[in-house]
Image 1 (cartoon, rainbow, N blue to C red):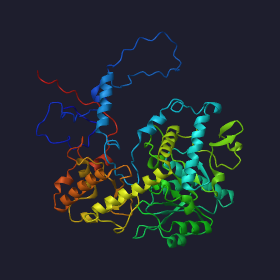
Image 2 (image 1 turned 120 degrees about the vertical axis):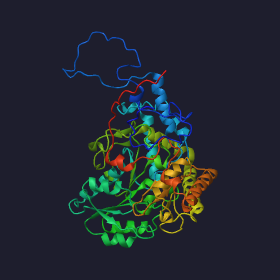
Image 3 (image 1 turned 60 degrees about the vertical axis):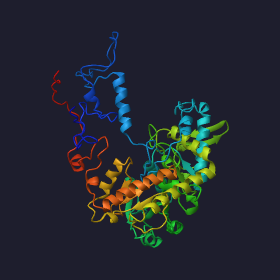
Image 4 (image 1 turned 180 degrees about the vertical axis):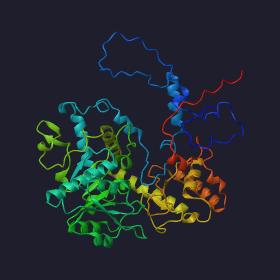
Length: 522
């Protein structure tokens, strides 16, 4: 066996050792070493001709020592990454129940559209006259987003949800400063159940964060918000539907209270997939909301580069939307790049260029192929699927806020595991053996041992039935006291359970060459 120093916290190999093999491989379940363990630094996998004479222009900064990278042939490199991909779990592999992450199916039609000539190779520095189609696509996407949310303006350039949060909060800060209240309104209210990026974003741009307490029903109450309101409050950052999988029933009253106090309402749009076509956030009173295109409109997470987190803005904040943005001009569409060229008062810009064109194409392809009725049905199906799982597990699992309808995700806690000797982490590791990626654990923080499950609308009834049956089997096994099935899981994954304490306190972040291993006897 090779000395795999790149994974020192592994407790053992996948499966059992009843029938050991010389290579460590078990048929197609192959043990994949690091690239440094495959190749050698003193060899190369390609033939390079001696370069012609040239004059160095590095000013004495030339490398003196070997770069130390392993030399591999093309087949070796290809096999390495293909084998790694076979160990990876993705939405094309199976149900991905991560709560509040919306791991929905990425339609291949959208991928084909993003690879069309003229779109896949568009460059941000091309003359505007040569990218009129791309600008029209951005304009159309913006129109759809504003229509679906009932808002006045949208900034497409933010490249992630947290980046979008920053954009929305900077627009709020600009609006406050424009009213001459920049020195007095410096407090942002954040519910205790919020995503961690919310308080981080507010603090990053100089706001003081005050928590809104969580109640036993999982909702934010307007009375609690009103108690915290004052002339120093700039905004609230509220997720709706919230991270407990529930729709905030007092959202309109909360928005009115904020506006009456001269503050703004920032809505975290991570869970927009639950209400598209059903409720428009603008009608609920929000002033800014980021939209994760990968969560709601089927673009892949990242997509081979930065993602996209457009921000929609109410008429109160529209004048402060950052550049760049698309605008109609005499000779077609133009991209307004500078604050001085805008008719309004942008707070600045978020990124060097316009954002991620590949994500725009995929999202608009999703919208056009579904239509307004299809997007509404997707939200309805996402909510239906989550409630189907809730109903299928409610007799075995415990729900922190009672057995009531949820939105697109259902939240359980670990109360039902009491005295079983099994923790939420143990249960999640056993799910890996059953072929499922674990659900979101320990989040939201207001629920002890949280298990947040989001099936999305992508899953069929038969897929959900098998998932429910697998979790029921695990639950009954835990209640029977079969702790070994859990405490040492996973047994069948490519790697066994890590020593998480050691990995956190003494991580090995650099590969070191092992001692030479003697050749096997002939």
